[in-house]
Image (cartoon, rainbow, N blue to C red; front, side, top):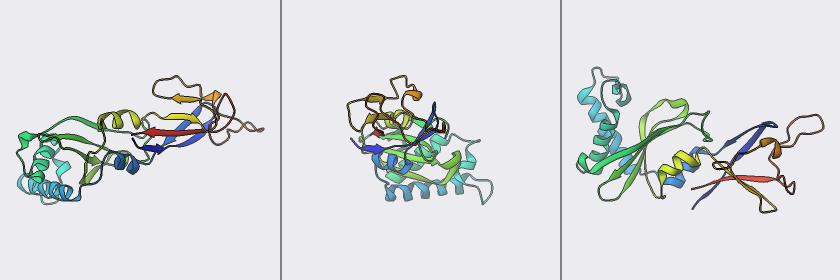
Length: 206
């Protein structure tokens, strides 16, 4: 498994947010596959050439008229040189900056190929805007659905000195027990162990 450090920001005694680098999460899921990515986007360009009503149209501007998943499935199959029937997807996602800890929003699909290969396509990025170029990654990790759905929203907190831990996905957290105020009533940077008072680290595991 890969451990990624998470940055914490304390806004008030009961208001804490976390942030993890989006690219680091994607790198832990799997590497960019430039050959397949180029071939996929070439196939999308060809699809637009065949179906667009005007020259400046891009693949995502056809979404209101056609099934975007079917367009991507056909393009990925073309990039892999296989029949579209051998490519399937039953998991798609789109994160929003108020519901996850990623440094940048993203959306995409997880694809299964009949021979066992798995690919991740990244179709939208910061602020939810559709990407003109779809990113493609080969999936190396186990349970990428879990990584995207859970590890992008919850963190593991652990004391740097004792054995105190908190899994924010499964435990109710009283942030006022983990934060400290200075003499003027302003929140101090960082989180602190309620047992020994030492600092807490924040991380996710992929």
